[in-house]
Image (cartoon, rainbow, N blue to C red; front, side, top):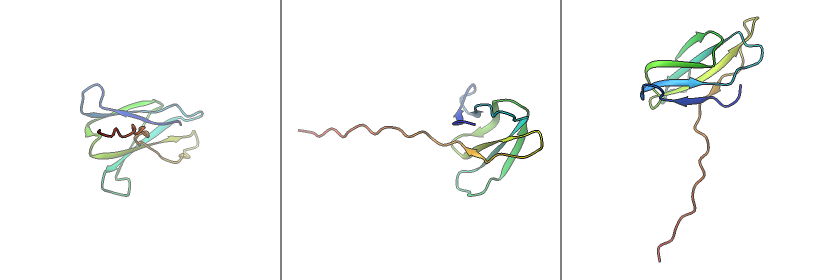
Length: 95
């Protein structure tokens, strides 16, 4: 499904999730859990879309994931939303 993308658009608060379409998928299932929990706590099945907004759910408090569902009801592994690696600039030494 490719790297899922997460933002606060358009409200500046709500969790806005995007993902690449998975060939053969007929729907998707969005998962989320509290940041301190190790198990998925909530889920919602959505239609064959590649964007979903969770109103009043902050991306700072939850971990999100998405899975594709095929025509036979089989589900893919859950792809979690993670921050991409950010390059660390070299340290500048004071003279």
